[in-house]
Image (tube, rainbow, N blue to C red; front, side, top):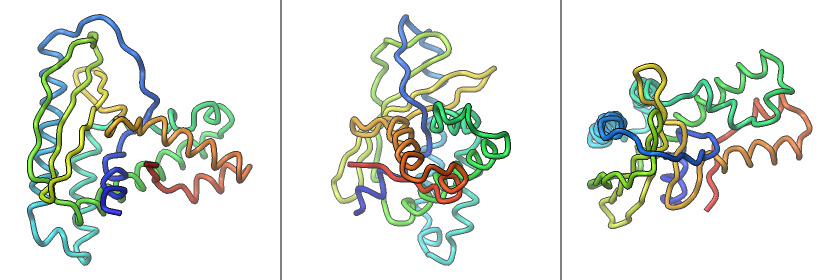
Length: 206
């Protein structure tokens, strides 16, 4: 159960993985890495605060997580990627409603995980190349206090002067593709976009 919650927690980004070619400048990769490191360190500080692990402080923790994560995740395009071809069928109101619902459920799931999981340490895996200007892949190896390890790969792109996360691969699971499939399955089952939007929850398969 803890592993499932942790996997759901890391799913605060989504969009199908995009193959990239060429070589990114070293400074680009370093800049992208620094964004993830800064955000991760902020999350670790929240996890170390005993008060934040109390259920009665959930909404306070949610606010802290939202303020930390939202500036570094490209939520504007992420919900579009989840909806995929259904995005073209949606009204402007439905697009806006899903973007809001998607962001809220992802961050709330992440917040719940922070209250039950304790990370011990992490290590940044050196760049393996294969990136290009404007895109970078940053890998982290995480270890929990109970000895579990996870490899997380953050796919990032540059918008203006800012690096933003647009997908995550967790232990080989493409989170973006998982969410896209989840939305498609819900649409096939319900045949009602408003119902799918209103009942959307985050789920990450093993």
